[in-house]
Amino acid sequence: MAQEFKALLVEQPEKKVFTRNIVTRSVDDLPEGDLLVRVHYSSLNFKDALSAVGNPGVTRNFPHTPGIDAAGEVVECSDGSFTPGDKVIVTSYDLGMETDGGFGQMIRVPSKWAIKLPAGLSLKESMMLGTAGLTAAMSVQELIENGVTPESGPILVTGATGGVGSIAVSILAKAGFSVTAATGKLDETDYLKGLGATDVIERAAVTEGSEKPMMKTKWAGVVDCVGGETLAAVLKSTNYCGTVTCCGLVGSPELAVNVFPFILRGVRLIGIDSVEAPMEPRLKVWQKLASEWKLDNLAAMVDEITLGGLEEKIQAILKGGLKRRALVNLLDS
Image 1 (cartoon, one colour):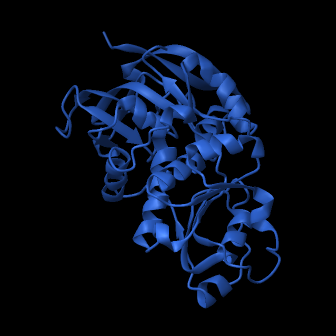
Image 2 (image 1 turned 90 degrees about the vertical axis):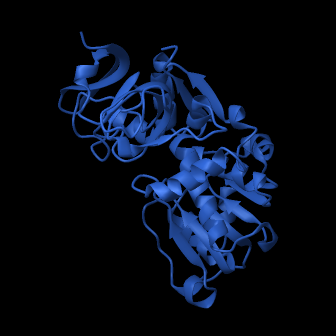
Image 3 (image 1 turned 45 degrees about the vertical axis):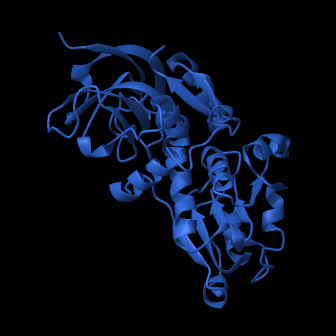
């Protein structure tokens, strides 16, 4: 008899109508793949919320289990890449989009999507980080590889109370940088300073004067999680030969900027993609997150929930009201 497990299942009973329920599923319901994993923890991302409400830009085929993050123990691996009992992290690629994801107690995926849990991290800690942590770490790594050092000057993080932003603030502070956190939620100032921010500014301060072709230089580097007008403004206000990383579009996917920052100040703009990124850079930053960048304040960034708590958090993240990352405990669900 096929093994059964609990999962959040999104179904489409009629056009433009989507339901979400915790159901019992069978391993036989899962897609084909080399690797069967018993999921211990997952985390909620904005993309998961979009999948849960039927956004066709994320998921088109239903019934479906969202969850772009998963960490757990290997049950079976048909190609020998892993052995039963190995602890693994699975993020990105198609997980939780068209492939049933981490909001189920079991997943089956291609083995090439998984990495062994680095020594120094627990499965729980890995999902406190999740895709948000991976993206933040990749952003910081790009700043460093492009010559930005703590001595270069302050680093700006936009959208600093979000999942990627808050972890980026913490990693940068851990690495010795002076961090300015920009946010539309100044009531979270104490929280951001607790994560390591030296200064906290209102997001409007970032774009003030951005109608000008160029702005006064302020930042040695920027981790931008917003896009749109904010990204255009930070490009205009980054120091000579500074680096800006871009990983978000909550402000806008459009970028209205001239070439002056690039040809007059040598500013570098680097896009961060954690979905299809090769394994080598993934492994490098996961190893850092388990060692020199291991964060002491991870628990302060998350609220732990079970599958039953997902609906409330999904609605909150869609309304921009989620104040902490949601860690999903599948063991207790």
